Image (cartoon, rainbow, N blue to C red):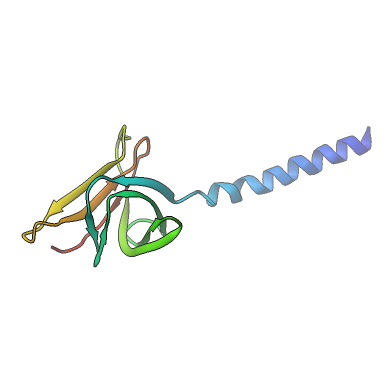
Length: 121
């Protein structure tokens, strides 16, 4: 009985120590689908599926756009929290005088997180 108690205690202690670590190692990545060509930084992203990953919090995040496992663009951005969750992914763009769409914001469906890009048009 003592051996089982020690095993249980060891498992419980190990779980308690790993829980905070797993909470901090939250996945800062989402998949997004662009239906039209959009510009981010100096890169034109073709329509299709991308994985969006970021490092950092608040106004100091580095955002990478990956397609087929390869990074195609990395830009600075701001991570903001919306008051409410959106139902679907939402991509906000602004059309420039050169008639191209510049990515301004990505709101992730079923999340309160959004990435904002200040691209100084």
